[in-house]
Length: 193
Picture 1 (tube, one colour):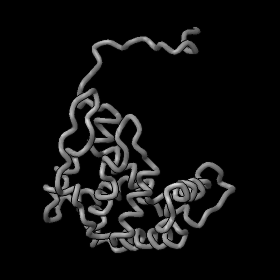
Picture 2 (picture 1 turned 60 degrees about the horizontal axis):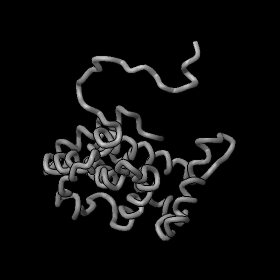
Picture 3 (picture 1 turned 180 degrees about the vertical axis):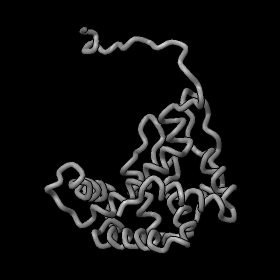
């Protein structure tokens, strides 16, 4: 079962109540690259030296690799720059009152290990993620790792687009602002009436 947005928000709220949550969340929100030629702020030491609290180190490394495949860096930051794996680990640490959620993530890591993701090189990992995602594009296809893929994708997307790197650097969110004018569309195919 893939968690709903409500489940993710509940986990995020619970995580905010953990000891050390203010330090982690403020470091996580300020991390990310700056565009437009500005120098990036230094990475918070908490995130540079992040030690997973829920996942075993090899599971955390596999999760981090998986999130980077889903949202790679290009001209904007990716999942690594947004510290999505650290955020997921932090949420799972907060979900101790939700054993079914923790079990789901432990089962996901077992599935990835059984599929060979942990031991694979980058190219093989990318091919495995593509194969795991096939049922998303073609419902007739099946893959034993599809549920693991969906869970990681859902949580990674939430983590990325609520981070500074995703919200501000990638989406260029500017807060509560409005457009004084609305520029006309300049796509040639839209010029016909």
